Image (cartoon, rainbow, N blue to C red; front, side, top):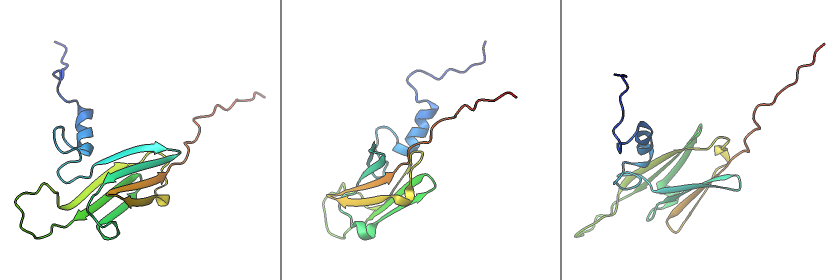
Length: 139
């Protein structure tokens, strides 16, 4: 007997579990029960994060912070008191944190809100070249 424990096929692996912590568990609302759905990409040396935040006032209901290499987005949607038969709207405080790419300049980030979508742009410095070999002279 080798003493190695094999993970059953089709079962989540440890890296999958870490991914779920950030993205939410499979089969659930993509950003978790009180998360913010996002999409992110790089464009012309800029990290771009887009977040769906319909029905909020970005001037007073949104807070964006950058600490070290983590961008955190918080938003709040207040529930209006009215009689209704059914609602699937989500109310309360929503939060999402993402790790910024290496070289991100969080102090130069900008944000724009349009048509229920918040777009955050963070410039990213070009990565420095890799290690350089230094020749040794003899003599």
